[in-house]
Length: 291
Ligand SMILES: Nc1ncnc2c1ncn2[C@@H]1O[C@H](COP(=O)(O)OP(=O)(O)O)[C@@H](O)[C@H]1O
Ligand SMILES: [Mg+2]
Image (cartoon, rainbow, N blue to C red; front, side, top):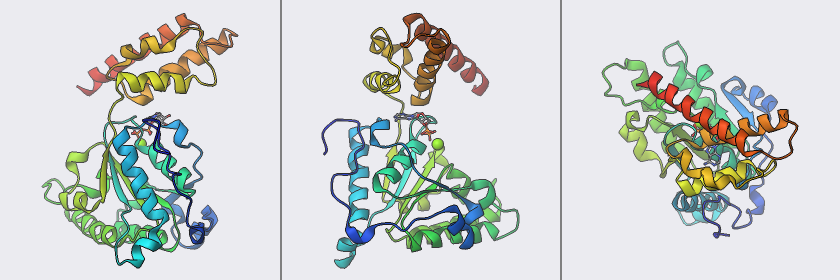
């Protein structure tokens, strides 16, 4: 259903029966030679755990439907759109959304391990990338590259040596050949550094922004749904303006911790207020460090 703004329900149509994914385990990945380059995660969080803008939700819903009914689209000689770039500041749901997409499509979330992928030997990074992209061709998965900027920095950046050019060139080829049985998600908070040619290869670019006051209000309720407040928590939404979802979540969890220590079964207002104050001063410290 497309009702319920901000929710990401990708189950609007039933999956094509022939597309039931084969199970991908760490052991299979190891046997096939890419096990140490990825982490295979069984997604746990679903659409009810993410708050996302209406437009982004429609975009993701569209891609998910194409991937589900990929055979129908290919039969008409068309390419399935399945490559998406997530941009935006930290703590605003890029990684969470990759997990939710995997959960909703009942696919494994395969996270590329940058530390293992980026090799010191010339040419080896491109070889590693090829192994991962080949794996995504043989079985359906949500292939997730976090901190994608580390791989896809602009080739004309004069501080970069020739290895990054080589990596970007092979990435261009691999993204081109990525054929839509899996979903490719790349995430970055340094979108301005991404090579333009790579940027153009993504079917969609989704921006994850900091939450509006209305979204903060929904997040406060969502994060306290199993341990509610004994006052109306929503009245504090505007005090979190400018913070990320992750920061708001942390204040809620800290308030819940204090309530547990006080042996309460609901959050008292004073616990929430001090968690909020603590988060505001922490944000100030972080700003000072970063400036
Ligand atoms: N849009 C959102 N809706 C609900 N919770 C969120 C959202 N964005 C972030 N969170 C919470 O903050 C945590 C960290 O966010 P994350 O997805 O890792 O951010 P990013 O990848 O953009 O840096 C998530 O695991 C989730 O608990
Ligand atoms: Mg992330």
